[in-house]
Image (cartoon, rainbow, N blue to C red):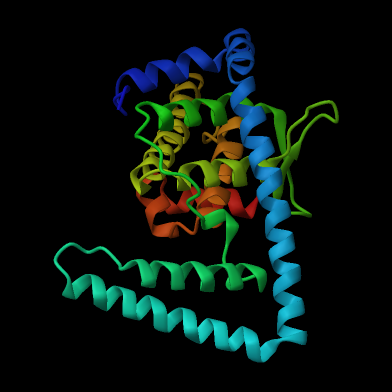
Length: 254
């Protein structure tokens, strides 16, 4: 990675923490925000369409839906056996054509998850997790937590941004890369939360005040990380390796 998790990234966090520098960072991150927002909105629309198709299929074509599900499992099992028995691990053209036909039918029935789909084959991008982590940190002050919806929403009506589209857009982007990219983003966000607590604790001890607490930006960053894990279907145990579980539970209570 371009930054070590205990060195340069810590210094970069301090640079983007001040208000004036955060403004400059937000301007630099504007293309990232636009990209993630558009991708997230499109994916949410695809998800809604899939849910509608799936509901209609269960009511109007339940037998066809069960048949396709069984056929899909049979084809995938056969493909796995074929890959194990052959040395080159390459499927035949006939098998590939059969899988594509079943996939098209399954998409028509609304099965599958668009957010978990890998659309592209992309070469590794060094520094992408750092860029995404800095984007999250710099834009969290523009959000507020809505307990009624259990989501981050824009704190000002003039902001062209909302919580879930950005989360879904980032999850879709990370899905196009190796899972280690998602792990790195969560690690950087976890480091930011922990460093915020340490900084707050140091200030409280020097002033002999009450126990330290999470800042609003750190709290929103923690909520964003939890939502990213939920959408990306990453186990909470992975997040607990980056952020202590008790912090997540305290944040959930508030």
